Length: 577
Image 1 (cartoon, rainbow, N blue to C red):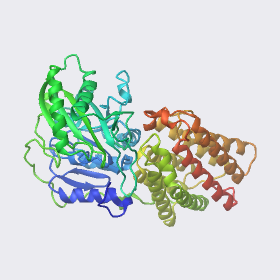
Image 2: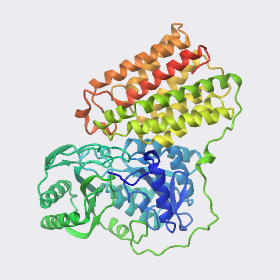
Image 3: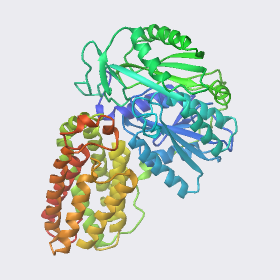
């Protein structure tokens, strides 16, 4: 359990502040994360990464000479937002292009993908790629479906060394994929982790057993088996990884990683058995690494990563580096001037367009709706989190509470500055995405932005325009998330909602009637997702556990739709959203 904390909701921000305060020779704070505090060679490819917090020394502990140029930090177990990633990328860019390398989780893919699109629009040369080292999360035939876990460190280390050596962006990306194909991880858990401020872990492992195939976001293992001895655990890890030994695999780095509460002493006991079993299989161990490289708060567990070296990878892996948590004897470079100042969060929220009075009316209704949606979600946060924990990481309630509260606050600030409907919704979407993190944060941010772009800041928002905005909202979710109806996602409630609204408008219903009808349809559709098996996201890996329970994203959307319908009903005007 996390004991040393103040306000649990402020935990990610405060830990980031403390990290920067403790490591001024390595990192500088920037909106959304941290960048190197040392000079980089002009024209060098900037390698940035990031993800949710709760994994230290990943990811911030890897920023420095010879490794990452910057890291984007999210909330606990939740991906950072696109705007935060753009901010870090701009600060890290040395003119040679930006490579965004991250773990393979839906929220990270969505947010970092959105960030890459925004950077390309600014004429920044950018590439993205995902680490897929977790052999437990998908078969070898579909490696693109695998999660990224502790193998991210050696993949990033090799990739960053290639960038330091002066390779072009395309060449750095090629090295990344080569490394990713030869880095594999397998892990087990003895106990679940507890989110800051929570009074119970996200999952429990029966006494005397282990969860096999863990994730690093508080997910339980894919199955459970008898614990056994340290030698037994080592055999389980090594034998599974050797099943995917490359045909030319003869030399490895073996990295034994503690997930949070496994003691170093336990890890060393286990590593002896790991090394012996690898040698018995005819594997030459170029280096053994034992410690905490990627944690999951206080989770009890261990993972083993094998890096299958070859003539390309080995020089990069052993190249010098110097970061707060991982070093290879690299001297410090010249510090950046102390007067270099990066942008702040306060500079991100501004009103840049003049709004019509008609749009201001809509903006007021939107602001009221977001305020009440935030209150409704907070009141149901525990239930949403418990529902998410059945087959996910249990953070949906917390993420939605943070996101909706930040969106409501941003909407209020923008409305009071004179903003119209588009500016209010886009600003609220950015804040939702930045504060919620995860897949739902990215999707809600994109949805509000898409709806706002249709409404504009000068148009009168009648029923037909509302139908168009809701259709754009749904299309944004489909485009960014890549899902469809039947995948057991929020789309299973959103698509019927938008279709019902459009049909009601076509039949001559009033705005209030259309909203009420559509919200009822969304509620019924969300309940019906209990019969579905998930085909996307983290719940896909534990799909059997999800059957019989509705999708948390669909449930939270239906709650928001119902709340907004009440606001529209109370407004009694055709000029509503």
